[in-house]
Length: 197
Ligand SMILES: [Zn+2]
Image (cartoon, rainbow, N blue to C red; front, top):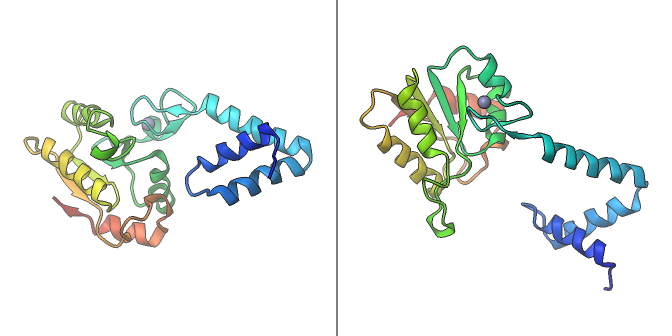
C-alpha cells in the first residue's frame, strides 16, 4: 500500500507505543486523519501541552506540573515512603485511600540486559533520602517480575544497616501484571497484608 510519507511517519510513531501493534497503529492514524480536523488538532495540542508541562517532582519524581507534586506538598506523614516503579503506579494506592504516606518513583526496575543498573534508576537518591530524613518504613511496591524482585532485594540490602523497617506488598497481585491496573480491593489486601523483609 502506498501511503503519504507523513502518514507513514505517524503510523511509525504510534507503533512505538506500548501495546500498539502495526495494525492498531495504522487504524489510529487513519482515524485521526478521517475525523474533523479540529478534533485532531486539539489532540495534538493536548499532547504537546502535557509534554511541555508535566515533569518529575523534585522530591519523589511523580509527574507534576509544579516543582513539587501535590502529595509531597500536602502530606504531613513523612515517616513512610512507598517505592514504585513509575508515576502511574501511585494511582491505585490513591484510589483505594489505603495509604497516607509519601511515594518515591524509581523510574524503572533493574534490567542488566538492557543496561539498566542501580545508577540509571533513582536508587542512590532514594537511599540518601531515607538515610537523611525521618523515614521509619519503606514499602517496596515494585510488582512481581524477576526484575522487580531483584530491584526490591537490592534496595533491601542497601538499607540493611539502617533501623528503617522494610516491607513489601503481599502476594495476590498476579505475576507480571502492571501495578497501575490493580483494582482497589486487591490493592487494599496487598497493602494490609504487607510483609517485612
Ligand atoms: Zn512529589
